[in-house]
Image (cartoon, rainbow, N blue to C red; front, side):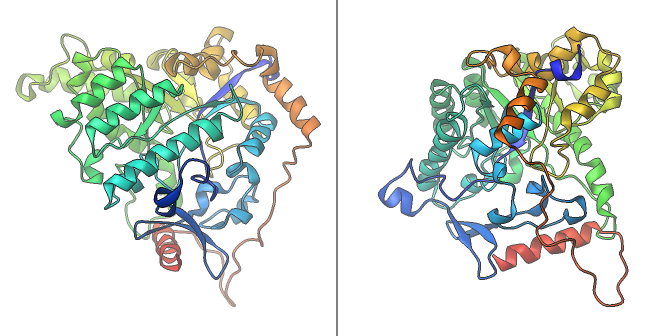
Length: 437
């Protein structure tokens, strides 16, 4: 196998939603009260909904920009690469990057639909969440059959509505939903509360994957406001281990052995020690903690229920045997700042050296197809979806990957010298953007 022969599915990318999300799915009062994309006097964009303003966050959509312009800008759609918010252009960007298919997470509603979960008017929120799902499945994904894995949001403040939405989404061909790995952060009961039992049952019955994306609930910690932001960024993927440990001890895993979770954007290098530590902790402490894995090791339960997803993880791939070759899938993370677009295949191929063709196929697309019950080859032949074939198509489409500047790097004040950006700087910038909105 050569690099151009790979078929790659990315199980973690993101949408910067356009202002037309609700235009075709709502009318009357429901449309009038739906989230609206606004523009400030300075030309920046923000979403407004039920008294809340949601500013755009720059690092969420910097793909195609010079790296020295990464930061809390851009904050307007016209500063973004069109593929961030237009699915037709996204497919072209996928082609030039050799991505056969992509699963996309929401942005302005938050990964877990938190905007709707926390909205005061829950009746309206349910209508608008369902409409968002319709846009995502029917417009964003439906316009390009076979190129996107749909991923819905759930009204988790209402379990009856949640079960109904899982069933409705399944009928639309959507086999994945994104939920908060720590719902207590949204004012909901913990995952260990019986409140969630209908969700576990429905997700199992309808074979729906629960995607747990980093940053949705458990924040990636940073030591202090003076800590360089790179330290914060470095630990972000590993922060998912907090949620993973919580979910691994979920008693529902004993009752629903086919319940499926995906640890989105969490990396894989930490997984071998995590499983080793879980086994040690259980062996050392279960006599007094009364943890119960029904005769299985925690590591065995983990391998049964959790798909581990990575962007760049050479160490993890070298230790694939300790993770499980059937439980690993690739992510591109377009258009976030960790994305290697448009050169993702080159780096992925480099890190896959030492693995055989069967393992490479599993990691690049087969595991994702199986886990998300996604038939990649229903609408396209395999030979049309290889890295090489997609890039030939992109060349014919005239896809331009030249970095696009939006005004250059932030200027320094007179007499100022470049300094390390800290966590506090980022927090202040976020507050300023929120205030401006």
